[in-house]
Structure formats: structure tokens, C-alpha cells
Length: 143
Image: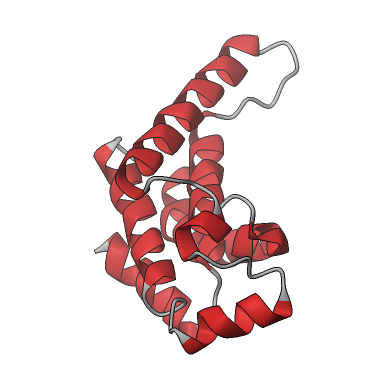
């Protein structure tokens, strides 16, 4: 169900990070609208084809659940880091990378490569696959 909802958000025009983060946000006390706003800048590997937006969306879910909010809560920070590593390792095992340009085969921070990726419909195929993979991975890990 969440995979479909996340894919639909992406099809509506939200980015990969927004699509993953928003479908889990309300479960952890954050409105969908706020999650969509927070997730906006992380799409397209933070506009630099770096860490895949679907992955950063997943990390935000983990942080929302496990993140600490007092400096002295080092155990909370450690747990959040462990859960983040568990998620990124699982995503990487499925997809061989967590880096946008490696997953797409194009560096979409460069206009000519963004165009080439668009012409190959990678945003409708590979990106959707990564969104679904991130949601599946989060669900498999109990989110």
C-alpha cells in the first residue's frame, strides 16, 4: 500500500525524497504537508546526483522515529546512526549503490545528462523502482 502511495506522489510531481518520507511521516507524528516541505530539497541527490533522494527520504523516516532531541542523549543518536546504516546497507544490497548518478547511470546535476536520463524515461522507471525499493526496505525493517 505505501509503495503504491509513494509511487503516486512521485507521479503527481513530488520528488523521490518527498515521496518516501511523506508516506511514513504521519505514523511518526509529522504531517504529510510538513514532510513534503522538508523533503523537497533532497530530491535528485540534493540536486547534485549524490545520495539518492529515495534513500534520504528513508533516512528522514528513521530520524523521525529514532532521532534524539537533546544533546546528552548520545544513546539515541547512536541508535539512529545504527538504524540508518542498517537501512542504507540493505538498500545498497538490493540496488548496488545509494548514489543517484550511479543508480541512474547519469549525473543529473549536468543539464545534458539530465536530458539524456529524461529521454530514456529513467525518472519514470529507475526512480520509481528506487522509491519502491526504499519503501519496501523500510517496511522490511519494521517501519
